[in-house]
Image 1: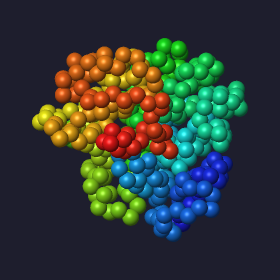
Image 2: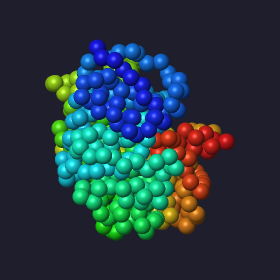
Image 3: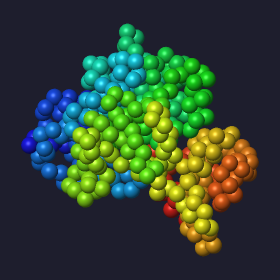
Length: 374
């Protein structure tokens, strides 16, 4: 057994980086708490098995947050695979919270590359803060950044940030489905965007632009995407039942059941959305992820989320939320009906100045669903 230490994210990136360095080198395992320095966190065990390097909390996007137990070797394998896939060592801008796997991975990649990450600071994410952080990067090193789609969209709207991103070795975008028009927009101005797919249970992204990196493996079982290999977690802290349900050991390979639906041709993975995001409306099955994909391709709808609401007549109906000013919302709804059938046409399209986000930067789907139900 080895000790498990708690470091609050508010202690700062340098403190978290130092603790992560120790954890990956065989010292105490690390849990980064989201609360302020000195704040209480939910009880954790004093010790964990020797192979554990990191305990990381999920964002809770698809349910209650869970604490994922990652071997140090899995975190290091993820960092090495990412470095190889992106073209070599780089110096990273840290633009994501360090109590989630995406931010911790930026620190792990920095340790792997032996470079110093540059954080945005305490003012929150803005194009100006990003540009200022990028200015502190070493001109002798390649540069990289990991973002969620909403952050990328904000940077693409800023001329100075666009110029900075053009010089980056890679812009890794993940945490949720990245709209194709957003990726195309970045590519059109010469920015190398790499779409990342994975989760805390796979040490973060292990599929880049649809292809597994390093020794990661992909398979489909009854339409469910399963990810395997050295990056897969040991399970969930103090939850043996859920661990047994979501993780499998077969033929010497550890697999994680993602609960996502997908298509896999042996080389390229296409994620279709959560398997439980299929509603039944009037007896017809409708995938919310498919509606989102069509909607995000419509003008003025790149930042969109579709949720389910109960309906007395139909059982369930989709409701769409889109950030920004209306463009031609009726045409967007008709495009969905044309592509997926009339049952898929959202009952409503609601415009908001901005979509509510979780601390991880992902849309707060639970809040949107609750709002739609009122």
